[in-house]
Amino acid sequence: MVSAWEDFYAKHPPPQDLEQNETALKEFTKKHLDEGNKVVLITSGGTTVPLEHNTVRFVDNFSAGTRGSVSAEYFLEHGYAVIFMYRVKSLEPFSRHFIGQKFLDLLQISDNNNETPVITVSPEYTQKVAIVLRKYREAFDQKKLLQLTFTTLPEYFWLLRSACQALAPLENKAILYLAAAVSDFYIPSNEMSVHKIHSTGPPTISLQLVPKILAPLVSLWVPKAFVVSFKLETDESLLISKARAALNKYHHNLVIANMLQTRKQQVVIVSKETDYSLSLTNEQLNDGDEIEQLIVNDISEKHTKFIRSGEIN
Ligand code: PAZ
Image (cartoon, rainbow, N blue to C red; front, side, top):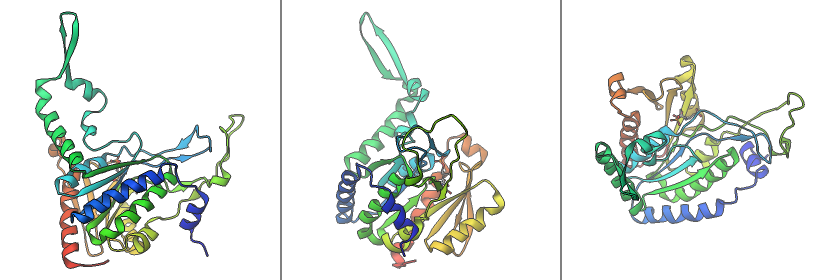
């Protein structure tokens, strides 16, 4: 019998840029395998579920890509090469520091007697911009950061599988850090309207369950890698039991559990043996400290032990 995830791939054609992304993935993983580097695949941002083939409307979720983009910077600081797989227009490492009005506030303009105006970074921000810019240049010059995008749920599925196939040869030197908010429901391709749904009456939309991709990922695609999934809840009483249920079902290494409302201040690291919180005080949060720094410290320490012990979970 064909499994739900195989059926999903059979029914959704690969995205047009998949071949190009696969080439980039192979080059990137080969280089870092040859150099003996550790590589982390970070998924970030939310997937969309289109309501029409010629998509005007889609179901989306709240994820801004903060967790993924911030974590990418800390993994680079820990010496990892990073494959950053993110939703188009969600936050990206480094540029996240300069988005929207923040970017314009960094700049100053001086008029130059009718000549071309001179635009510079305001002195109060120069240090901050320099720090980020140096790290950004270093990551790209050393080819340590590969960024690939998805938008829809099927695009995410195809790209994730290709990324896993490219990562498999790295065995236990690879981390999968699955922070994207992936839709749990979708409309099967053959049930989707071809054109924009008419607004002549309330539409009846029937959603189906998305196959659990962690199952083939852990057991078939990257069985030797260190796999970290995330669990988001809004009801605190369910958080740890759901995280533990995922671990017991998929047999991966860790679940990072977080509540929607407090995700920037507290997470719970759940493993088979234990669970414990990592958190920031209000003061630390107001000072601009980032919980991802604590998460990445913790994960990279665990990954080092995992490599040393040659353990395969
Ligand atoms: O992208 P963001 O920083 O706004 O949110 C991060 C997050 C809550 C999506 C992530 O930490 C997470 O829990 N991802 C998995 C969500 C899920 O349970 O499917």
